[in-house]
Image (cartoon, rainbow, N blue to C red; front, top):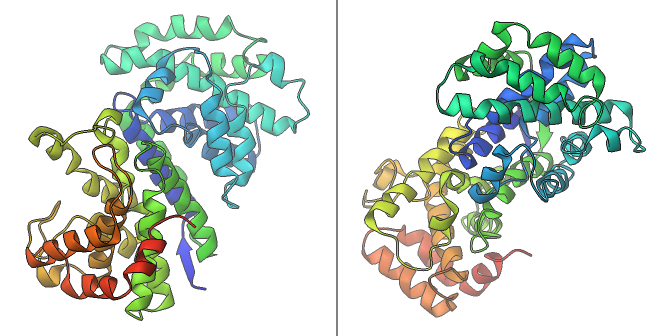
Length: 408
């Protein structure tokens, strides 16, 4: 099994960027919440490790949200079933050994302190979860000023009052007092502007180092990315897993190294992460896309690259994933690469993506048979779209490929 040198914090930062795509009007929400939470922790003299766990959980606290329709509710101060996304996020994080310690914090980040303080949990988890809840609601109250580009300083006193009104009930009194003390300064509010929040997060990243992890640990991180995008639409559910399995299998047929096959699997899992920017109704549309809608879809592979390029150690994977819509004749997107400009691995993922999509039921058609799939793949080869050698290889093992395209 291969070893990868990855900076876990870079991966978490990129996952936060992916979550930002879901909330088109609420960009950098996770980063602002992480900034405010960390400042509260520092003000209270919490340990470096507690603050680091707090920061990680805060920047990922909405990882249970994939749909734009759900994300819109996050802008409300309170709403029915608000704990659903907490549960989903917690269940997702617990599948990753390197992030499992964040799961209970995310699970309780919408639980009122009046209930949370009596639960049988470590005090650190209670405080971290409630701290995120408090500053998360602060950021929601800030939203009307940030969206309208009004002067946030004009709203600070009304925001502070709304938080004070929940002292001892929704929020721990000690946390409220820390927030009230910190938020007296103009600098606290002005630091919520995007460039300052990004700078704060960059400093956090600079203080961390890469770590050696095996394929299974890295895959568990990557799987979080793919689950979030697959959960966005019932019609793309398990698509990333299917593409990943099939791409790895095709790579093994070409006798690529074990490391390359593992990287193909990871690229398959990540290839559609840019679709988080797409509106729910576009992915669920039961008819053909209009030219305008198609241009909107065309940006998703570039958004995939934009999210992944910041994770050192995943350079090849991010490139292969971003090129899954490139075509041999140069007619693909987003780079219009052609011929030798497209690696074998990227060509494999392109074929795996088309194959799996055709094998899977979609809103505008039923799933296709093996014969129907191969007819379309061969037509695409003849038209200069897909790599002939890859498609011939698939054709020679088509029944196995069909099985690999579905989650085991």
